[in-house]
Image (cartoon, rainbow, N blue to C red; front, side, top):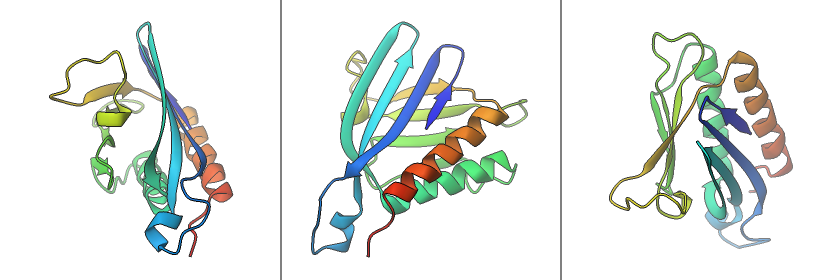
Length: 146
């Protein structure tokens, strides 16, 4: 999934399940996520177990709701609070999202540990739809495991 803006871009890719198998439902559904962020002339890449399968479903549904102008919530947060999304599109043509990158998801060049780094992206309709479709495809390869 890729979202861009005038000075920034954000990519999220599901690499694999964190655990190949576990007797615990929660553990079976944690995903290893690759994040790539670009802000102005700086780039950052990290890999960590940041989302579960059902949280990826939540992200897809949240993005769909924003695209349909019936947003579920202005913000979306997860169990691991180092990644989050907010919709700042109100009254704008197109979309404006803030993506929270904190703790292990914070860029290595960001030095203010007292607050998260917010990356601003502004995808158009086509890019948002491509991001939703891409994320749906990724989740199809790594579905919720019973």
